[in-house]
Image 1 (tube, one colour):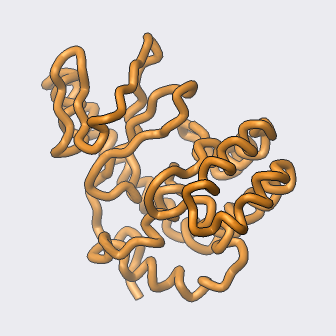
Image 2 (image 1 turned 120 degrees about the vertical axis):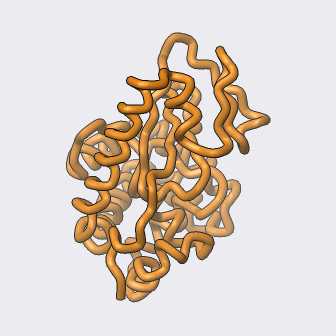
Image 3 (image 1 turned 30 degrees about the horizontal axis):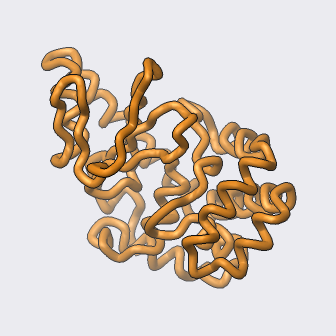
Length: 219
């Protein structure tokens, strides 16, 4: 999820107080075909394929890439086709969706190249910030309970038992059906929590951690 949200942030100026320097550095590789492919697949707004955000608790980028590479071709075709129908890059994405095996191989190469250039150099600092956030959430859970924990992940989040209300999700009901809810902190999530769309997968609510421009360095 960190890779996906970082791609959204790379295309948006709204968070420049924190991410501006990082975005400017990234633009120096703006002509890269790897980056162009990823920006097509993960537009700043709207739907992005869920298969590119595998759940890898405590795993490495290699673990995540292994899961992406193991995506069923039918799913890759379905989700790439879904993003193509909504994208200005439709002419580039539709041929990709029609060749899902080749698309997966291209995406694996693209994510690896993007990771090495844009994320790996500062990932330890990002993970340190996430670790600190998790400690704070554990303290909230231990001292104030589940409701306080849920409401702590964003100003637009309200716990009205047994319903969790999240601003921006008003027209979308997600029923847990006994699957539980994963709270996933992300440094590249900005201001408001977001979620994975896949109705068959485990429900995941991604929320922003405290931001500090020094984490990604400055130019």
